[in-house]
Length: 146
Length: 146
DNA sequence: TTCCATATTTGAAATCATTTTAACCATGAA
DNA sequence: TTCATGGTTAAAATGATTTCAAATATGGAA
Image 1 (cartoon, chains in turn red, brown, yellow, green):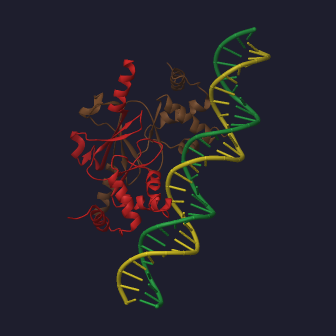
Image 2: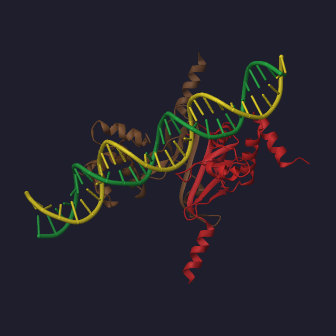
């Protein structure tokens, strides 16, 4: 049975990146917190406990390298910060304007598989929705009851 | 016959913004260059000729005010800069990775009119595509002929 | 029209995220 | 062991955006 760390090590090597301790730890964090869509800062803060010498520059460098290799996708949905998304399957994002949570959403759409639109070649297809998530809607409803 | 400037003046007043000279000029620029999706800098540079005293701060302030009132939409498709989109009808964006141009696209999609998805309330629905525009594709083709 | 209160504009300074730089360190090959 | 290469680090530089306080413009009331 292959361990999770082994899996991530292989992933880095496949992408042509040396599996250094810092890169592995950053990748592990992204993998463990898929739902968080963390910022550079969140990753740095979380790892600084375990790796006291880690620097912001390393987190920036690493995320830029991951992005170039297609391991990670920047998500600029909030408009004020860059969040990072560990790439698994293509999916879309929902930003809750109340709690700020970013929720992964699967939207089926006929354009999804097209390779071309109005003569332009399609390489990437991104979608995002802003609104209020069902948890915040529920809270609002309960508040109004009293 | 109502002039274009009158129309923009009315638009500002309707939104609760005093139609000052600077705001009118910025709005006029946005209206005249719908296809450009300009940055703060592009607007500043273009207006600095006509209004030598205008400041960056004013352009920032004005765009932030326009955004709050729903006159303008920030477009973060390139990942390195904020482009501004003068709101007319809902539409989507195509970024050409060769020439950097942002092209407005009309995509029909069944989800487009939905008010809810997986229980979350939909307020805004954004979509963007990255690829190579038809003009750059044509250039590439011609190059290969020789 | 003139005066006034208020909102807007302005340039300078402050802030904040990100990148650059240069020194240091780790790794693997000769 | 030595060397070359690439990665990590902290400090400094950069660049976009915001804050601040003073100056100015605006629209309403007298």
